[in-house]
Length: 337
Image 1: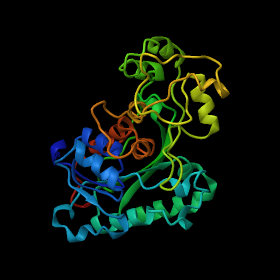
Image 2 (image 1 turned 30 degrees about the horizontal axis):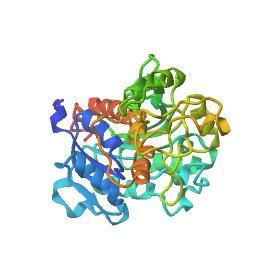
Image 3 (image 1 turned 30 degrees about the vertical axis):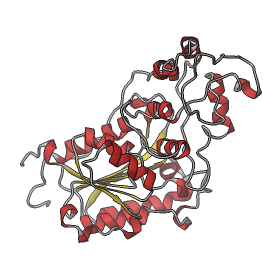
C-alpha cells in the first residue's frame, strides 16, 4: 500500500461555528479546503484567525460542493451539526426539528464520497432510546455508501479539557482502509478551573486571584452556549450555576473583563454566594473549552459566548482527527477501492 503524508490530507468542515473542531482537525494535519458556516459572527471569527481559510457563509441546505471543482475530492468531511434537535433543551425533537442537519450531512457524504466522516453531537444522540431509529438510519446509510461506521461518547476531561463534557462522535471510514481506533485519552486529571484561569483572573490587577484559584479547585460543569434563539447570556441552567458557585464563580452572566483591583471576593453574599464571586469573560470560558489563548472571537459578548459554548473542544477534535489520519495513511487495495 502507498503511504499518504499528513500534508496531503484534506478536509471540508461543515457547521464550522467558532472553529473549535476546525482547530483540532488542522492540528491533526488536515488542510481545510473550505469551511461552511451560516452565522456571520462565526464566519468573522474564522476569517479573523485564519485569513487563508476559504470560509463559505451559507446555509448548509444551500451548499452544493459539486459546483466547486476545488472541493470535489476530500479526505475528511467533518462537522458539529446542530445539537439542539437531540438535546434536552431542544425537547429532543430529532428529525422533526427544522434545525436538524444530519440529513444534509448524509447528502454531502453521498455527493463527495470522502474517505472519512467525523460528526459530533450531544451524547443523547448515541445513548437515547428515542433516537435509536436515527442511529440505525445513520449507520445503514453510511454502510450502504461503503463505510465502516463507529459511534462513541467521549468526555473532554479525558483529553486535558477542564470540563465535564460528553459528546457523541460518529466516525465513518471507507472500507478497505486501516481500521479506525478511538483515541484512548489520558489517565491524568485535567487542570482545575482555578489553575486554568488564575493568570487571566489577575490580568487586570486583582490581588484576590490566587485566593480565588484555590477555591476554584474542580473542573467546570458542561459549558452550554444556548440555541440560536434562546440562552447564551449565562453559564447554564440552575444546577450548573450551583456547581459554578461552589468554585466561587458567579454564573448569572458573563463579564466584559477580568476583575479589577477593587473587586472584593465575598463568601456567602447573595443567593448561592454568587454576588461576591467574579464572573467569567467569554475568553476565559474559551480557555476552559480548550481553545488556544491567541484565538479571537468576533461579535458581541453574547455572540462570542455562544460560539464558545457550542464549540467542540479542540483537544478532543484533534485526538479523533489524528486517529482518522492514521487510518487514512494507507490507501485501500485495488480490490477494496
